[in-house]
Image 1 (cartoon, helix red, strand yellow):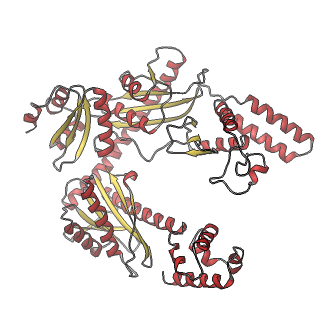
Image 2 (cartoon, rainbow, N blue to C red):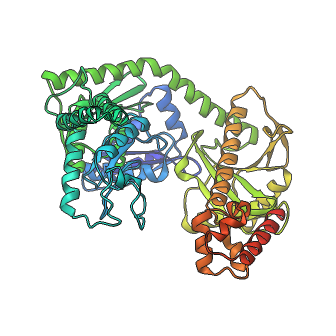
Image 3 (tube, rainbow, N blue to C red):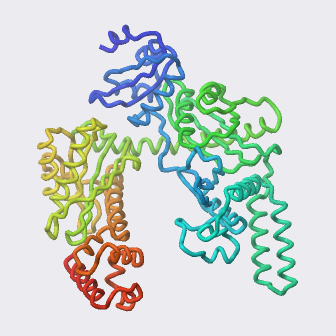
Length: 589
């Protein structure tokens, strides 16, 4: 079948998709010549990992494009859509902090991630959030941009400390902000001499006035600036922003090292190590394409991989060079040394992790007599004595949390003290009805938290939707930890507490429980259940808004003394009525 299909593939650029026996996309690639590329998969001998990929392929599909660049763009879009098991995927959990001057009428400084790539006042990345926040604290002391999230009706303490222009009471021209933004940009580029000199003069003046505490504050600020902007032994004197990309490889793995050079010095780094199939160049390009769709790219990129030049320059409006000598070459050599070191140190760890995750998935498949579950969707519910039920779905792709795919659900009140079965029915029906309507990716395994009743509820929902999907229940023991599995035939499967499957399922169950509990707590803390106020005599929209603005949560209203209500100009009679109703609501939970 595959040989016959290969004979019809054109010799044209495009993207190809490898599918398993269930029609699931397991690998996406691109080629300048689709026919030649696809033939290489199914002819000749291959190493072990490529053979494993080929053995999993049941068929393939392809999309012809006009150019190889169009094929690359299509390939990246399909990787993001299908998140195939055998492709290199950008780690969604990892993000770098940036400092941003917001694009508002009255801008403010903030640490942000993910970042607005279109904002020209975006500075970073920083190696960690602590470094970004330390820098932000210095900037907020020096430059009087607003600190509040929402403009108040009167000036705050920062105005009196001369750290805010108080646009809440004063008209501030755009030209004033432009000048401040220019100064901040210069500061972050290391041009701090003028600022430090001014602070030193203020420190001396404060000391002469015997204002020693103020002088000490100026001294601390100067020291913080010098620490933040200290020069590195490795730096480029032109103070330009650029990225260094170095790659090292062996017979099975490829390591990528990215140095973020900002203002001539290394500000942060990104390093990745992964398996590759057939050749190492394609996964490198795939990773970089995903990376720069998520992060801003600087005006210049230096690399030891000439392959990336045309694609990165065409797509991201930057200049890519391969330096041969000089300080840029030395920095690139340093990045390459780090890539080789990463390759040496982490190859064994990567192999162990792969065996741990995929090995556990293969074992789980044997236990449940199902195909290997590369995508697992697990559900857990949370409520308070039956009230305010919520549910959460966590997704594990290739044995790892896929947090972009997590989902939260607010559920209907069942009216029961314990409505877990009703909650499970509702969330599963909503999730898989939508999956059918939108024709989105299907799970290889559904895990429900609970015993036989929850499992039977799940079976009923799938039957109603005419869906055949692998299903199992995760049961906790008396210690409230993962104990055993129940398969779709209601058989109990004991788990080896020291095995890989137990470790994986425990992680899945704990993650689902954590996500559900966190969502429930968040909703309660935000007071989204404040609709109880709508039914209290004497509480109209204005009073309700006043209560929620001041107390924030229903729990705070219930615990507050009557004097607190009086301070809001709410009569004692109405306050007593509010507290009585809230107390009754609390007892019924």
